[in-house]
Amino acid sequence: MTGSRATADDDLGADGDLAARIGHLILEEGPDDPHAALEGPDHLRLVRRAALAHEASSALLQQSVTAARAHGVSWAVLGQELGLSRQGAQQRFGTRAEDAVPGTGEERADERWLGPVTAFDELGELDLAGELGWHTVEAGMFRHRMVRTATRWEHRRVLWARTTSSYLTDGWQVGARAFPWLYLVRDTGLPVEGR
Image (cartoon, rainbow, N blue to C red; front, side):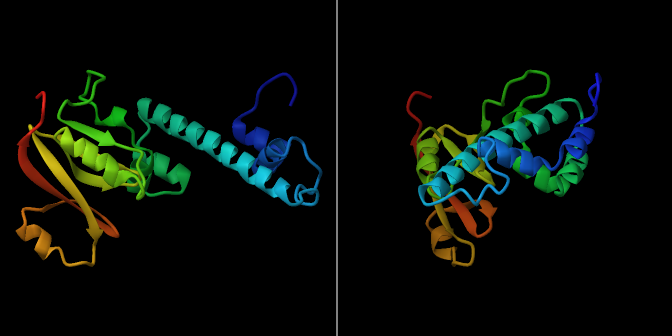
């Protein structure tokens, strides 16, 4: 390529496989066979560096999708480009900015997304949110859509297959479904302090 910049696809075709190029960067321009020189603890270094590269590329992908959405690219087109369905792309890459009140650049005061959370920390985060009057109404991958009221809420997570009738008789209601979990919520009736 002389003098002019070709498209990203042309660059990848001319320079070789992107995965191989990233692999060489991770290994700091290592040998032709990157696994031949790795022994013992070097494998852990490779895992650590690959995780860092994954984190950086994930952030770049999220920024790219957000920019494309800001320029009017539909979820269907993005999903096709990413090998996902429209809904899959929206669930994976949707951002808080898309939940904003149109034209204001701000989120609605009574709704927000909680996340990222995992199965290990989400109940603690939901408990904290519940104390402030928030309860889950939708659960997606690594996040919950929350709605705020003037009262405190309790949250429970149970397996979908488990019978929930005992919970529902105690004032619990289904806040969200995200297989294999049901997220149950219960209004305590106690006012949120300072509200």
